[in-house]
Length: 434
Picture 1 (cartoon, rainbow, N blue to C red):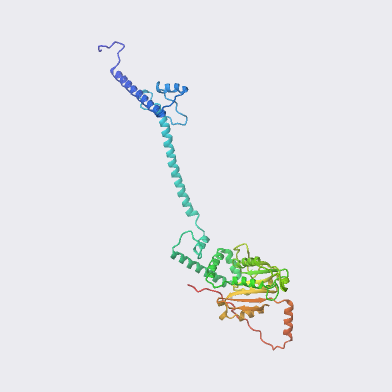
Picture 2 (tube, rainbow, N blue to C red):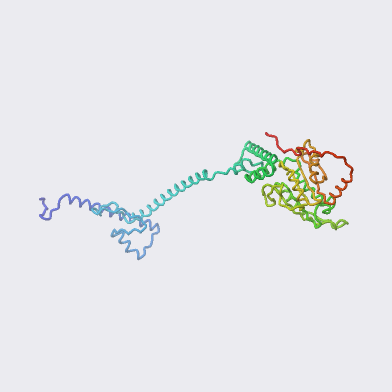
């Protein structure tokens, strides 16, 4: 026993040393609590200080004097549990401000992690979307064809170099020439079947056609429009005037109309017509009332009716003018003329414009003979244009035909062998291969 040891009251040395260490740690923790509380108060007060409400005195006393920890909110992160063996010496027994700092720091960290996860998720979604776009949304064959064979002046999504643009024009030109050859070397029925199976071919053809027209000195459609203007200077139905009814009604059938530009021009002409108010002939003039029927293999716009022009949906003898403007394309083009003759009224007219090179040696004599044999009368041929020939035929009325037949019967004629019709009337318009 030592000097101060008393029996029954002696404390082992190891326990005494342990208690001394615990007391020292407790003092350090308490001092750290006070320092942290003071710093926290200074942060809250600022330079000018902060007024404390009477209701907060009890909470502040328990927190800073008695060392009680303020319970954390429900949504906050719970602090790690302190071992029961050493409640006073745990370093996590931080000042009251520590849980608050943990509460603010940990949600921020969690929020940042959520943002990073969301960003990664969005990036993955973008990758998946781009992958699906390249696999599932491939451009169709028709779209590729339309873009590849786009003609001059049609904008593309990507900016092309001059060399690329030139190559695109060559491709478009070759495509146009191929379609053109198909239309001239097949029947109208076959052409109708092709256009139904591949409707984009119609657009490709007319894109190429527009490009060709730009180099022409004159468009035959414009020539026909000018002819209508001139003939409206005379009364409708009069010699030299437009054929039509007495009330001014004029029915026009545009066979193989393309994009129906003639119908547009006729509508503009109708609006601008002015009738003479003075003179003897003024009472014979009537305001023209045009009715235009445009037929082709595809409905490119609302003005067009889809039809094979060897069989159009018009009644017999219902049209005053039937127009074939570069439209005698199929190998059965005489069927087109017969159909025009069917829908044509007596004294009505058929207007034809064709390329000169289609006629054998630029001679229209045989062509005119054949159309006369169908029952038409030849009025006029205009070959003044370098590229085109225009012809006008009319359908005689019954009285005219009866008088003609009677004159022929009264004539003394020798028995002659019927003249054979030429095998080739119109050559197909085929461009040179390049």
